[in-house]
Length: 231
Ligand code: SF4
Image 1 (cartoon, rainbow, N blue to C red):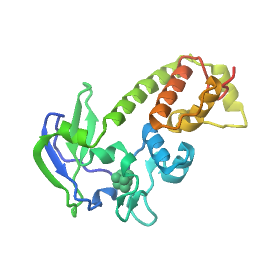
Image 2 (image 1 turned 180 degrees about the vertical axis):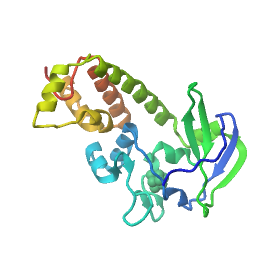
Image 3 (image 1 turned 90 degrees about the vertical axis):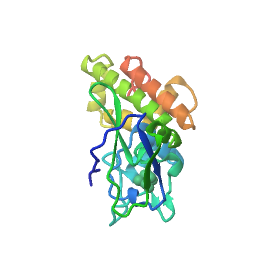
């Protein structure tokens, strides 16, 4: 089910407050897309690899729903079972965040579930709400990946990286990592990069994020390739 947005546009300085009453209605009927940073946080929370996480909990990069239900796969009897590492959109709820063509960041509101017990108000600002939801690291990671993906697209277009090894890769029978997965499934790329750099595989998400970005940057600069990592 698509999210339905109210016809309201706010900036981070607009009046807004929201009090959640844990009715969990907002965890039903949503399509929640997960980015690489969120994949790292959630897989780490569950103590599994990003590859296992994607296999068990995602369908086309969206969180699966529970069987025969439209509830999020992570919704438990007492609420979100991954609350500490829940995705950014869950933190922003009931706000949606967009970027205009001009680059300005704007927020709108989602229509609540008819039985939602959430209470809306105007006792604070949008920016205060973002602070309470601790979205800072999510926004920073999102910005870094966006910049890097643009760089990778340019590198791919200009064949700046090693097209030789790309070709060898696509002909290879052993396809260990697909190109799209270099971004979406961080662990195998981090693992290969760490082997190449002869450094330990990082355990903390912040460190994994740093190394994943560094590895993809190295690929875009034509310095390293996750497929043939010892050339
Ligand atoms: S991840 Fe948690 S907060 Fe987000 S929809 Fe699922 S159960 Fe709800």
